[in-house]
Length: 158
Image (cartoon, rainbow, N blue to C red; front, side, top):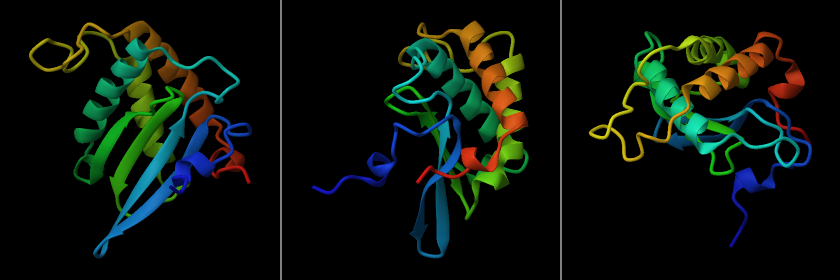
């Protein structure tokens, strides 16, 4: 079997940032998959499942209620390695195109207080595995990166 595209990215040099992972066409429709890398793979500790799960709930809720991107959001969810998230949008986008959206989303995550949306037994298969304070922490940390993001954090390293 051939390696899938995401396994060809050099994870030894990859740093936190926002990267276009792939673009797929379905007829005339382009779907853009983003690699939202929040930690440096194999260098920093990965995020724990509880905060990843909380970020997933908050991010998905934010995106599916966003005035511009709600109808374009296909998926937002964690990477299995727990170093970041995938965001899949309908449309042909660059990393630069979505930085403003991600700034909004991560500020929402950083500042969120109260009941995590969908964190109830009826709504979620693992509702007890949540950590809002750590999700807030990661939201603040990634927001700081987004506020001063450089070109090398918007394109995969060679």
